[in-house]
Image 1 (spheres, rainbow, N blue to C red):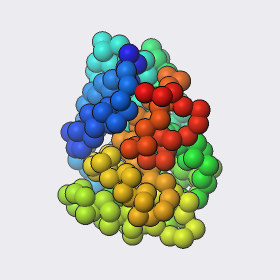
Image 2: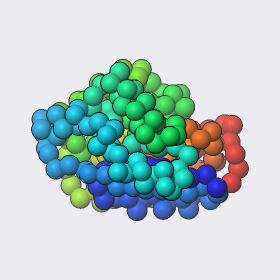
Image 3: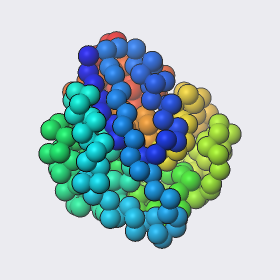
Image 4: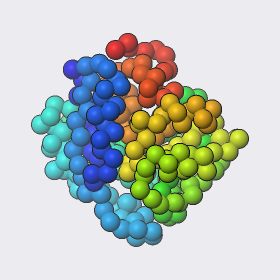
Length: 236
């Protein structure tokens, strides 16, 4: 059994993770521990994300240690402090957890490299200031954002997810990124990729993939999109 430890902000859309476990169809367990999601908006939200530090996650990290997690991935705003500072945060998280560690933000960069894309479109429900921080992080990792987030807000239902992806899509984008962890996306990945004709990377999908990468597990799970069909694979 491989246990993946995820630090998830708040309680939005976390039921995507049991669905991922089912689609992986192997001896992989996703251990989810919730952290404070925050309530700031706009520039205040961006400032709050920049100030985030691993010591604020200490209680949640202890939960992952008790669960026997073999990797720790922070699914919150790890991109906000910038590329270099984010590396320092992840090193501190790894020390606290006693395991390899990463964040969803780094996961998006690594996933883009995995599927061989460097030009992406981003659709999110985040405020403009927060979306700009995410775009800057991607650029620092060698991923160009060719279409920005539209910054729309909503309930995160299936109609919104598809509308967000369609609005972000442009012909020169090699993949579509939906980075908001408050969106339910896992059930819709094959349909999204079929409609748009290109890979779709989403927060929960990328978070679990990044945790698997840290544990040297490769699972072939087409139901989780193109990201989970890369070679070499470990059949479930």
